Amino acid sequence: NLHFDTIAGSEAKSIALLQTVAQRFGQERYTVMRKGVKNYMQNPLTVSFASITTAGEQTLVLDGLDVHMVRGKNVLLVDDVVSTGGTLIASRELIEKAGGHVVLCASVLLENEEPPVSDLVFLERIPFPA
Image (cartoon, rainbow, N blue to C red; front, side):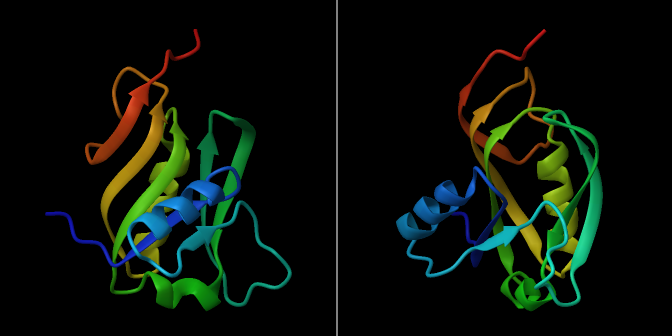
């Protein structure tokens, strides 16, 4: 009996997945966290993190205009592929920084032996590259 108020995830490949999951659960909107501050953003919240898919430190950003979408809400956090969990963990931190609570993390694929977070559900496991 999982209850969530809203759905969130990071750009860019996961956006189509976010749209599909939102439609499936009757949600009219979802929240996208961007990988960098954009000129149009107002009072953005940021979290720095490392990811296996990109060299160097990255910044995950929630536009201040979107904070109301997660503040005080139970959030389903969605990603397409989870490897080390860097983006997923940073996403959770950013949602909590905005006043939201992640109730479940979901991904299509897990590219690791063990999930990097205890509340991750996934559809399939793929081999982790050596």
